Image (tube, rainbow, N blue to C red; front, side, top):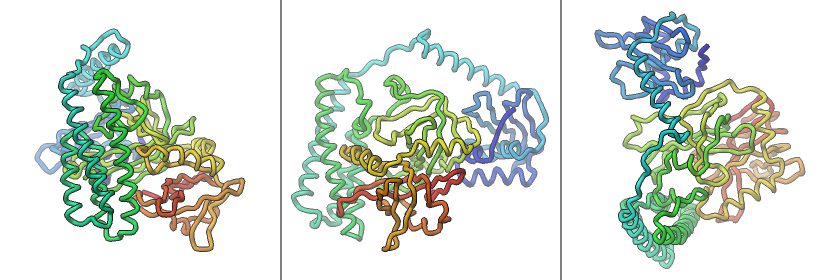
Length: 478
């Protein structure tokens, strides 16, 4: 029997408005036909629309972890509100009449089954594709252009360092943005985004804070220039050199990882269960995109992964907006990008199951029990200038204690402490929200926290994202 939860349907919605409108169709009894196949792997029906004809919609669960929604309405959102309403109606227990699978859907299923067969044959080696030829001449030209752009970027960075950040003005900011655009044209998209981020920092009114992070940004760019040049020179000598699958240098150099590449590099796990511990969205002006970020614990391990979806400003209305997910996600294949502590992951479909107390117990069992050991792991990552500057860690603590100055600190079972504070890179503050949390939740709990190294003080701070205790979960960020 098909199992659908409201939380799972919400996660499929392209945005909150579509989910709301889908529920509204059910509440207003707009569906005049509600059908389910004999095998209960297909929902289909008709919904009243604004035109003369009814909208014919369906949601096919022949592949449970990757449902396919179809509708005759003109909407460019997938699933549309009619397909979402169909699922909400089923989840609400509304009666669906059993019916035969429509011919057009049966035909599409046959084509999809054929594609899956060919895919399985390729993976087994029974069917092979023609090997992809590398245009070495074009590759050498690209590398030459990247090296030239790195040289220009180095001159710019050294000029800023020699002149001092105090001499920067509006003309400097304009020059940085123009240079960032040229970096993008030279296939250095990672450097393009970070140089634009530097320009934004120099535009801020609070010079004391912005200069601190601007200095860190210059260090980051300088490290990329050195590592990027060494990597490109090696590749220039050997065009057959395989991509680096351990560090982030390929992404800095503009490489967009394909799932097939990650699989070939062994960066894929099968039959994984993920529990989302935190989620938030923010507007990244440097990338000119909205960014949806989730942190997930891989059950059965201590690994905390990161999902990232970029929605360009120009295309935001056509892209599905991610949201918080409160069930356990069952993943057939989990692809891991080259990264550090919180590897970015991707998956093509999920099969949800209701979160149980045992899942939360497993999460706390995977948490660091010693603050010094957790801090050591964070510091090891921060030694790599191109690694993620804000790693996330789950720690088990004896209490979250208040300090005399009105702040908060984590205390582990051995009495070690860690100062809490809001991280500059996060879009929302959450530390002071601890004063509103039930005090019983602040004792013998697990805390998911994002770390940051403060260059002005030389100290690490951590911002609390989520608190776990028993069967209770308090998300401070959303």
